[in-house]
Length: 181
Image 1 (cartoon, helix red, strand yellow):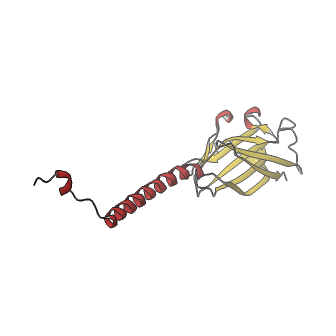
Image 2 (cartoon, rainbow, N blue to C red):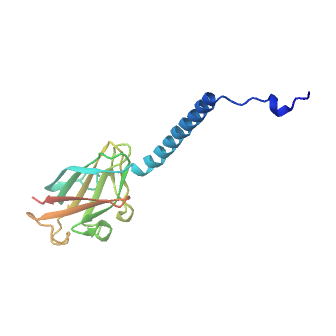
Image 3 (spheres, helix red, strand yellow):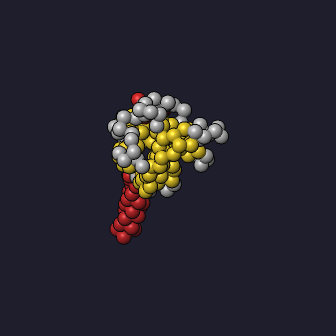
């Protein structure tokens, strides 16, 4: 009597087949969960800049050029920035009374901020502002509005409120209102 090759083969028991099927399903489910989590993490990081402090002071001897000689008079507006979000923020434009800083003459406005090393730096070109606020960190923006006998920003007089809006590279606006003393 001849035996066939098919008759000598034995299959897996139903219990072992079920265990293998469940194990493979769990491994695939965990892999998909990690993959989806990494995709969602990229879309859920966000910037959230808070402005805890914004104030103005008037002075007659500001050393705006940082050259050791004082004498410029006007308002010094200091704005503290705090990023409480999960992504870095970059301020790329500043508006004063709805006018972009790039449209205001550098002879009446001066802008200072802290760079990545924490050093106070003067913005040389208002058309390409890049003020970085890392996640969980703070920064300061100092805006000098010079009071040069009517040649200053329209509406910049003692007792008025200045609307300042910081615009980020992510498209968000962070407004502050400061009363000039």
